[in-house]
Length: 313
Image 1: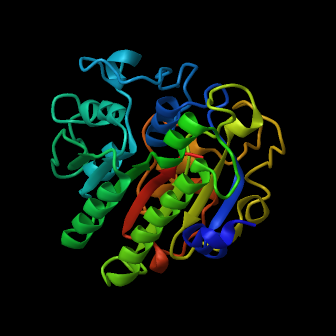
Image 2: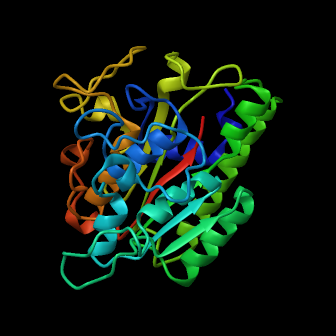
């Protein structure tokens, strides 16, 4: 009933393939573990997991690779090594972990075609003010579009921790959700107004977790249930579970693990979905993907992917 106050989400619900019943990692519903899953296409635990299970600002000497004991490839590796310009716009300081892990000192050598270097993230911007952050993103997009860009919006999460996750229209949390909606609207408007972006850009919108009270990270449905919106040229709008009944299983209220033939839609698929839309291969070593189910006509394939604009629910 509050959708009229969220015009960007209302537009996505009309034009995107989406579900509001996607899942976080089966074991973690915290920020860094789940954003790392989105960027690497891996769960947290197990032999193939990325193994980043903490949610604090990391020690500046640690990378995802040193923590895991081997290199963990990312969506930035694949996009950059195929010659695309990449960016990361973050509203939390802890996202410096990714800029460090995939920077010139710790990124892997480029073994794909021409040598595009070890620095996999061409532009890294940190600004806790998401209004300023998105204005910078829009200016940069207009100056030189990215092939792939990741954008993080902190407003709902910060309000949830401070004031609680409450859905009353007047509550600070819902005001923060409306701010996040406005930021997404600014990005959509920038795409609409630029001929180089309009009709050539995909937008993946998801979240790292939900919340109750003033916290998240527990085994409550509100914590592990997240949205997943895919807005892209050539992608049929509608409910993801209805569109792809042979690819995904709606988990209802449950929190299934990675076993089983049919998985729920997971936020960790976002990186590989973006690459699939760009016609690029999946992240090496990744285990979470929706790529085989997303049928996009070649003539409609986008040339820019923004993944994910992530308002934390």
